[in-house]
View 1 (cartoon, one colour):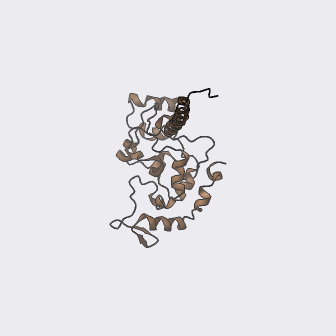
View 2 (cartoon, helix red, strand yellow; view 1 turned 90 degrees about the vertical axis):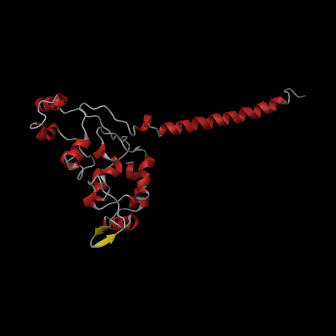
View 3 (cartoon, helix red, strand yellow; view 1 turned 60 degrees about the horizontal axis):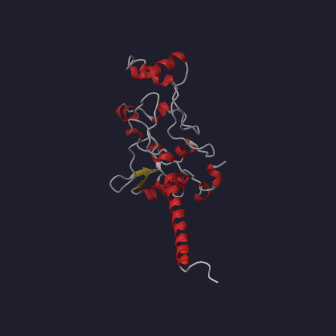
Length: 231
């Protein structure tokens, strides 16, 4: 004996399709949310105790990254400059600027300025600044056009896929070590070749291959293994 009418078959099929569509839509939404600035903070300018402008200090005044970030070449952490570094200049210029009162107060009291970290990786991710510099990865490859940022923001998503895009093909990004801190560095071309050890390179593919060998980069298999970043 038929308990349900024939129309229930169509309703059942429509219900199954509807559930699949709803689940797929929810999954798509969560994936989009996971990669959005709401989660990653990419492109977001976080509030700081002092509106420090990298654009003014780097492009306007020509201050090298290493003047403030002193440990970037030797440590896993780039280092946040102590107040004394700021006061090297600001004890002489802009001495009465109200905007810089937190700097002067920090110097008088000895209490560090509580800057808000812009590029913040999870605790389960190991990252070493010094090894990237030694291997010829430029500051702006990860941090973006810092020299054009009136207020600092996170240029990349800092998600695993973003890191793996470089680790799977490092030759596309590697540059001569003496150009790591050059924020306006351009990859070689036929009109502007790059000289390394007396050899001229007119494209990034050949330069990257040469520098990968010269700087003794580990294999792609090694630098994409889990324990490289998760220790």
